[in-house]
Image 1: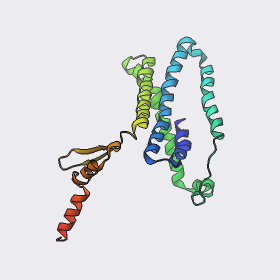
Image 2 (image 1 turned 30 degrees about the horizontal axis):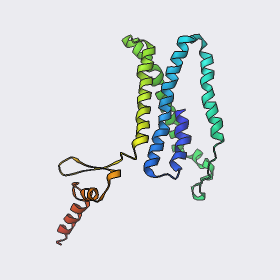
Image 3 (image 1 turned 90 degrees about the vertical axis):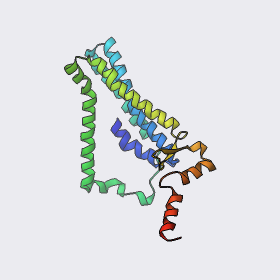
Image 4 (image 1 turned 45 degrees about the vertical axis):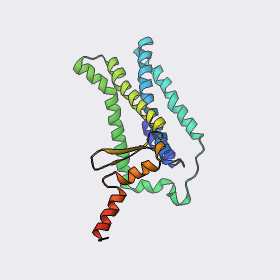
Length: 212
């Protein structure tokens, strides 16, 4: 699921004509879906096994399979604008003869397998080494990690534009921090004057070097 998001959906969102800060927010929100999905799958599966029994895992696998199948069908119905003529590359056929392309594909496969292995066996390792029941390791470990990561990305997507700050180090080692919604004349003057490498100080130094 996360691999499809990275390979298919991310380039589409990246190419949408949106302002840079909004694009960053949309990308963060998009990547939060995998985190929320991870937490929901673990919690729902744990409840399912508690009430139905682990011997009925095949039914749960079929239920979860509905989501990616439905997503694939819905994705096929999404209207996509064609690429500009100068960005078309023979429908991508030239990539198949590029060795770097296949190396990247192999890296994606290996890294995805490593990620899934760690996610699935981390709680089992805790149970074997520390005696913590696997169900607690799944809920308070992997699921909690996914939920916190999803929450962070969702909050970033919601507040990134409002709290986007411009920061520059000044000569005291601190930061000039200006919120974008308070970028008035006084703030612009601070940005030009206070940082150690401010434009005004740079031009003064240049004029001094030229003897002006």
